[in-house]
Amino acid sequence: MGGESRYTDLYGHPRLRRRHFPFVITEKLAGLWLRHMIESFRYCGIGEQELAEVVAIFGPMAKHMVNANDNVPREPLADTWLD
Image (cartoon, rainbow, N blue to C red):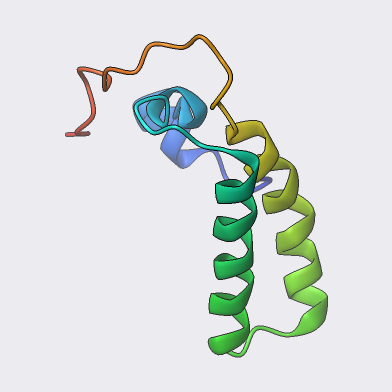
């Protein structure tokens, strides 16, 4: 999301979408997740300008995570836990 690459440098690509394949994510659920994230940031006192930046990143990410109609493997990845 534009930050430092420390996580990827240590563990490799996070495979965020793949890690969510066990969960059936619809457009409605992605929208609810985004709404709750926005409300959480507001609750924590994040300003509207910063919130707009977060939404600009999280909005497309939420849409990218939708997998309800995709033929994807639904079993969890074997390497779920990071050392």
